[in-house]
Length: 496
Ligand code: NAD
Image 1 (cartoon, rainbow, N blue to C red):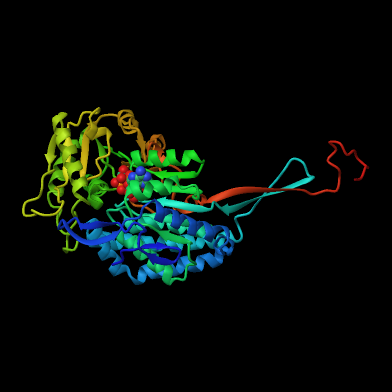
Image 2: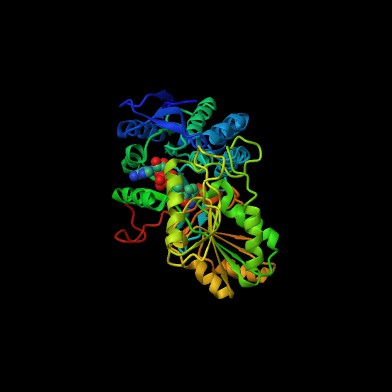
């Protein structure tokens, strides 16, 4: 396990020598210690990225040449899938099969952006038709410069891949700061990039705390673009930092996503997708469908089946075969989720199932999945992100009422709708104010499709070609394609 910073192609100790502990959330034990970068280290990393961008070869390579490095990184991730998955379980607590799934997706993300990098060599220039034939104009795309990326802990390597792969494909150089709760696979990504021969300074990885390393990265004048994934309050700070010197900024923030289930839906299918929508990854998913609206006709039957199936979820160490729900990521997160359940109860909600520490698991941040009903519409449980395995369920009678409740939120990341009536699901999908809408499912995510939120859930889109656009500037090149004088003071026929 690595513990140093990766700056300018070298493993270095932090200038002030600080470290922080890495805790296994299943055992509460400190199992590793990692370098805590401060502003001085961030400055060194940004300067390395700056040199690699301003004077290095990376932005000047063809897309096809950059693609070779991206494919080598994808291969490196695949070769080490078992080791990386294990690190993810130790760091984050998630069940091993989910970690393996994430690592496979991370490799796929590098392959996908390798493909787009290749396309940049020929298909990314566009000719513009102008109304004045003396001019010709084209649009070219160029890398935005040095990108500063800050990511959360819920999908550690995958969130890194969502930023590193498109930024490198675009020709940017970058500094990535992983979450202090889950720094290990990002450091391995640096090692994999190093083995792939990535030129020094192109990718720099600094581990550290938010205020000590994240904020200096957001504030650094040498950064051209900030790409942030995390909570709304931190996103707001990052955006404020970007505003100081007009950095480009993209934000992927929180959510309180609704799931509308109409009474013609198959109850068994609905139960499975509701559970996956909120209990997958311990509910620590930005797009988790944490507010479920069920039409009256099936509400009682669906609730009974949901409670029954939720009771069967195997809770335990992510390494134990069959575990579906691991521990929450940290003591802090565990406390926050428990307090949110207690506050919901005080506000009048009923805990229809769970929400307690499971029997037999005395150590580790384990929590039973929780189902809340009678949740007041103005309570924090209904309006605020809990970021844990806690679902709020309420009945509705009409489509209009369901859409009204669904859209009554300051968030707009995702939403889901389930019905056998295709016209209805299509209509509802279009009326939901969210960047991602799932029909008859919840959560499946594809690298090819845009990801991001409306309202306070963020700005910009990741993944697909939209993810690449995040790291590109648009330049028009306009040529005066005639010898004729312009005619402002040189008249027709005159020559200089
Ligand atoms: P967080 O905002 O606490 O931290 C995110 C990152 O920001 C961490 O690396 C942290 O060290 C850093 N940070 C903290 N303070 C900072 C500062 N002042 N300046 C710069 N960086 C700073 O979020 P979290 O708890 O790690 O993640 C959970 C949140 O992330 C949830 O709200 C979740 O919805 C959101 N999320 C969103 C998406 C998405 O795609 N929309 C994906 C995953 C998570």
